[in-house]
View: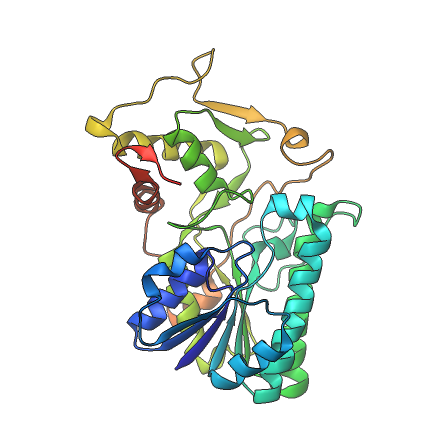
Length: 339
């Protein structure tokens, strides 16, 4: 098939592009590299079935041409990351909602399948664990910018499902839960690359809040396999699916695993010296200092993935320990952090 990946120079998009090419498909990446990087796809530039367009999804002329030439649109372009949500909420809302409107409008014109990336943020702070695709959403007030990203992605989902129901457009939606792997950046608050970089530099790992909040981390290769599997499944059209691991751990436990992975990657497994006056390698930072006064975090976020398993037989295979080892290896040159 001929695939168009919006946001294809990003962390997940670049891995998706590689996998599609390996399977014999043709791939076009559209990215304005506002949060992605051309370095992520530099190894693909000479591939005969790969091309890249450096442009925004809001450019209607470019989108019209690219969508008309493809078979399926993987819509991954979005403004993401907790820092960005807090610092530039207007950009987050406009990019996510207006971008998706543009993608769906053009895809409907040419009757092309659209596979939309959504997020576990959809569930807000619901206490109904694990989250099923039909779990009620529970959000904080609109005065807390924290919830603007969740709301914008919910609008994306509503739009995608509305295009399917009203116009018969083939749409598949997947919700990601803490995808991790090489190429992910810590610039926008992503916890694993931030922890790894701090540990590689011999700095204290900064854990926000009390560190007892828990998450489930899924390797990007497992995630990409799920996305492609859903795309190839005709029964997945018009449906929403969770993609993630059900192996829950606290952020403090994650910090310890990162320290172990970094120490194991050093010559002879040498442990870096303690980096604080009290000998601790992990320090807790209040949310008010890390983000904004009154910031609301989610204590637990665990997916129910029984729906996607029943649909395509998918479940994650790669352990977090193996993923962390690959991330550390990808970010080190002779034992020092890479740029």
